[in-house]
Length: 410
Image 1 (cartoon, one colour):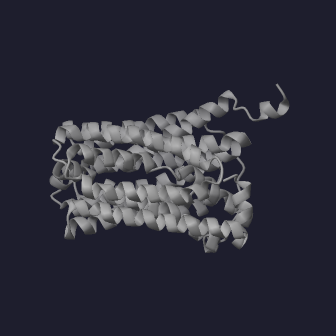
Image 2: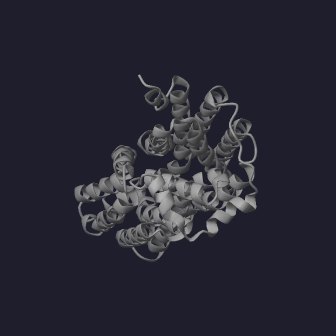
Image 3: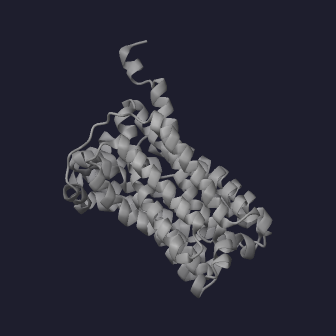
């Protein structure tokens, strides 16, 4: 075996590290998304409307979107090993507070704390993977770490929803607390002690957001995810009221939804293999057609479920492409902002979740559930338009973006 081939292979420590970071995103994804399956229970128990309960989704996403870049830019100067352990501990504390919450106010505060901590943890996990993994494995490992969120939708969210329905929604957050403790124990032994730290001020790193190419690329996943979450935030009432599915079957359908979203990660790998942004232009058009189809299929239980499962297949299709694309753009414009750049894809996703949940809340409050599909489709078409614009600028070499585009093999 040649030296070059050996250099491209992952050793045992790197494989275990990849698993640990994926487990961490699984735990954070479960904590974030499980509330979607419990909106009805939370609204009833806390005596709040379904629209107000929906702010537990949008509030988390807004806190994630605002807090993550600011906190990542500030804490990235500190040693990563102790920083990761402190942040995981704070994540556990946030879930304990959620489990103990008896009022909407306390629950939303705990969700905000958990959101900011989760965002920084994801950014640091991506940065650690980029630092430790062989060059040829960085893309697949980053895709694997993102897959932790998918797996959380397959296993964590349905299981947490079932726990909440059989017991109470607070019990679900004790479940996520236990998952957090497990991640902390593993991280103590697995995370590398010595990792390089980039010394750049928060102001310098945040300045990366003034670059037009970064801004344009940032909003591509934002509108794609907004399209999905306009519908997904209210998937429980859609299933129960729109498709006339009994409550007892909701957790099983959420499990199926998560299983179908696994194919989204496979699709993401195919898209990111080469000229990813070019492919995304058309992927989002397909996504728009699928989201819009629910407007017509909600009259039928089975046809409506087909639309929802196809929606799951598209949800993460752009993740790997956009993550590598943003990090490579940052490498061109400001290498010291690597940790900060690694936070932008999950931040964009959570801005999209907040936007989608907010749009969905407005539609539910002023219209009907079936109208969610039309708003979601429109958001996906905006994502396609932005991808067309970004690809065109890359071809022209505008804002030096072509260097990142070519360097990322996207």
